[in-house]
Image 1 (tube, rainbow over the protein chains, first blue to last red):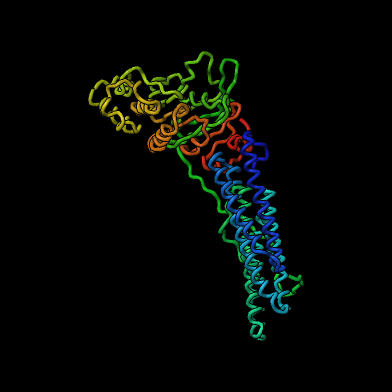
Image 2: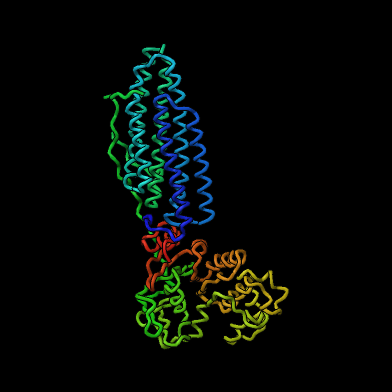
Length: 221
Length: 279
């Protein structure tokens, strides 16, 4: 039940707002990095900028805890911002990994199997956008809805891997390319894991509930 | 990457309902029951329909903005308000271990032995350290030197002051630092073996080190005593107490486990107060 009214201490309000703005900026840069990486355009410099933002958010978060000792929803907002930045930084690392593989793929004639990854890419990016959106809007219900989506992404990854292994057996000359595609699928699957973490942190921030590591019924095959 | 449909890919499953285990709260015996209490200073009502159950051997903190009635309620527990003209409980009752403490047959001196009090400003008597602690026992008619010696040492040890004063028990209590004087007042309260200790902002005049020592003492005392503490220091309530009650404009807004109140209060007013949004 996060409070919406203004804090008596304007300096705290300002510091908290600044922290959240940095998280949102980091999220938008991470999204841009992922999109550019998937197009094979990303420069490593993009990742460095995100790394610096992660350090800044950590520094600001610690200073906020130290100076204001926030409680209740204020404390959850600070803690979740710091946890979010760690997940965003790891997503940006995945973007760098994808960019490297994409560059390798781009050196050779395009493989038609690259299209197998498209649904995974769309699904992972939707999970990413929805989780950040749920965090920004402090919408626990929307955040909860993201958790089961990770199962679907895992299944997509398993299916793409099977298809690529099949192609490898049939066309060993393109082995290197298929392996790079499998790596990209794996990186997209990791993006989904981080989006799930962000959704869990969004539930914690909005509803003070820790939903991590809960047993859920298996999704029907 | 070029976008293309792939019909073999599984579509996302619908969201699953997460199972939450039921929360079980064990029943506890109650040390102090506050039943629908209204309190007035003359014609001015300051408490409205307050009901509360204070568990034994735990620290309960009362928080709220100035004038919310938390100190008034605390002073009801050992009838300190009887000393103020026109101050009275106009409705409801307060029970200690089930017995109404405002019943005509209640001996107020005995009640105040059972329910001790430590005030905002330390108030040692103009006597030696030893005599300060022995005072309550002498009032109760204990004269045996050995019995008093034993009680003084036990109380000073329990209030974590013994090692600092054991070599100067006959010195004036006024020679002690502010923090030591406050712990001496706690020792004085402990000497008569109370069941409940009421503390009205016991650290508000102390420096951080002295505050830490008193808080550590409160933490240790809760194993044997029921402690009710009024504090304006939110962090102190969070550190020392097991339960917290939030009052606003004479009403009890929320009462519950301190960890719950400070992490996820149920009431918007509590949330706004503890996060500094009003008050």
